[in-house]
Image (cartoon, rainbow, N blue to C red; front, side, top):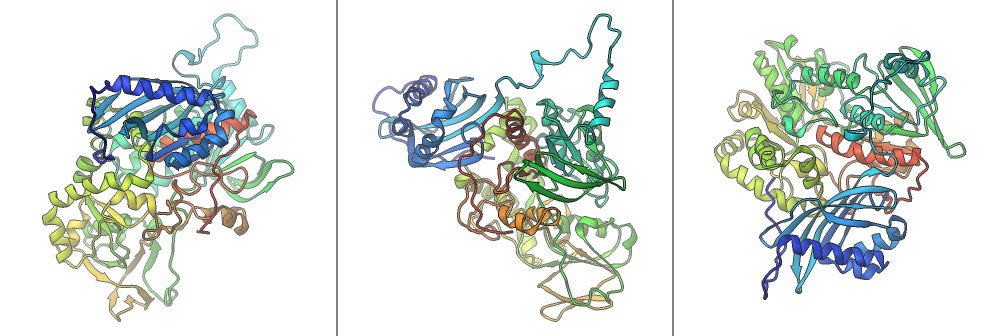
Length: 614
């Protein structure tokens, strides 16, 4: 990601202070205004166009406010309670192109935080352009890490000694029977596991349940060629990073085994082969009643907080088409694709042109199937090596590590870029990719493939954040389309016949197997199935920013809808996303849950309104 855009700055008329002096002076003045309760003065420390993104520290929410007016609104609602203090740089600030960037620490009445500010000169004054504040830990509830790590053994003689194994067995036997989990996490993929590990370290009684027999089966059961398209530096889980000989792009079964090992090593309370069948919330008792079946046996759990970690992609979108009942071949959604082995020499039609569609087309072609991709709408494609170089290399790579950019620091740098202007940082990177891979794009478009760079040219990551679809990271299959080895058809499917797929222009594609690579619906669809449609509608659509671009309708919301933060349904949370988001945002969700478990007041600023039902 190239950090090159910034607002215009005034030319200095006197000798400029050093970056450290500028940052120190700004923090001292800002903190003095806060200490005096002078909200207008504090808001005056922000540029006319500016952004404050707060992750839990002030708002008990994930929220972004804009410009001095938004800052004044946030502080007016939170300042007295938060009592922020102790703002100080945590490492020497840097200056480039008129922007001073400073990492800082601070405290609130209940916690300690970390942040990143970008300062500019405006009207002869130093003002904040972007301001990130994050809650790092709760006072009195710090994680047992570093100097606080547990002893692990009680030295001495004790006739009533309980070993580690005995304690773990007792805990496992009591959880869900004599002791109810404070938090129930439904979904044991990377999101649920990461959150379970965070809650474990915070001492929150939690339970992660999943329908599969083993942790990691969510990955093992996918088509056999599946590999991560994101690089290893982007994909670490909390606490326990991949070893430095881990492959850049991990195969699915290797990830599955890692997740299973992680659950054991991090001691995540985890029930496999467990399906939640219904859930309801009582405002009177402040708890959920969740009916589950564990290895076929019914059981009732009564958590106070319920987290759906069932996957950002939500429920599979499986089209209902005339003729599906008469089609003689195999048909299934991409999430249930068994792999290519059974389809050698057969005709395969893959409906869709995003990540899963390309992966499946490539694997089928490798196994000598006759493959046709049906493209229904334009798709953005980026070469994997170009994305690594221009899109991620400054933050997540060996190059970044050599420059001192750890995974944790990279996460915060990325989080510090407000969604409102994030596209302006992305556009130059994708312009560079377009130039580097011009020959590929010329060949791809000559094949008839309908390609786009996003509504505003901002490329893959903005598509992911806005709509969670519409792109492919090319690891080879796009070349098959560009070369004509995977056939290409366009249009909408109207119906199936006994032996084929019919498009809206009358074209019939012979098929022995039809794969619906047709994406997924909003995560609140899981809430509709488990709880009720009423609750799903009360929560509204999950994911997206309100950017008013394709499949991300306005109004502008400024954060990912309903993700990792309070929702309009009391005590219901959504957690998901890729491995990066599962790692980073699990901290803020865990801290919100820990605060509630400890009875710390958590008045929410800016609770999200519902504009779309999903």
